Length: 282
Image (tube, rainbow, N blue to C red):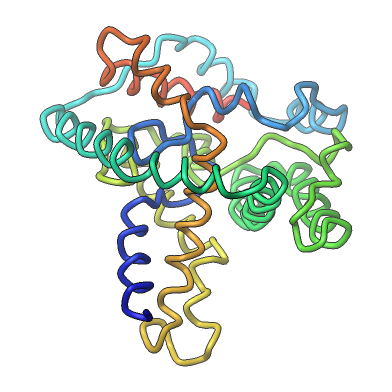
């Protein structure tokens, strides 16, 4: 039985998208579609505190972004990227979607919502560091306050009492956004197997976020070291649950975007880049 569970964990590993996680990835297995931002539980209106923080940011940087509405990017690895797009597409339809559908069918909505809240709360280090690296100290403070409220009153993050306070719901920041504010460009487009669309800038950021993710360190909880005993499977199981749970809320988004596109590869690339641009501008 133990070996069967380990085998299942390894299989689920191939359904995992790396962080964030907060980062929107819309290709196949790396599914967190651009349309997810339309269904976010974050209030549409931004608080006065956030507006004041925005007023202190570099206006020239955002004016430059506004002048570049048509997002274009070099795609020198187009043959690799298209191959990986098809790999991820098949992994989504053959593995991730069926597992997420089964999970959704047997799991109550309130439980799935609690899991989503828990992992969102656990993403605090990435959002906090991303805010600090951009000089958004006000937002870093808001993130800290939200983490404190949801961890205490929200019972370890299972509930989201901070949701009702607009001042505790700043736009999510990440390391890739900080790199962009520093002036580091996208580079070129690349599609990673399993992790989905990215750029060299966001790939480096993704690695950094991996080490900011508390789940990464679950393997150390038994004190035996990173790759000893059964501890190495803790992080795998947690990441699998995070990805499957997140996908259970978004089944159909990727399919709709794909079906509406004349060229799904180009549509997904544009959606990813536009969504990343939107995140950087917030």
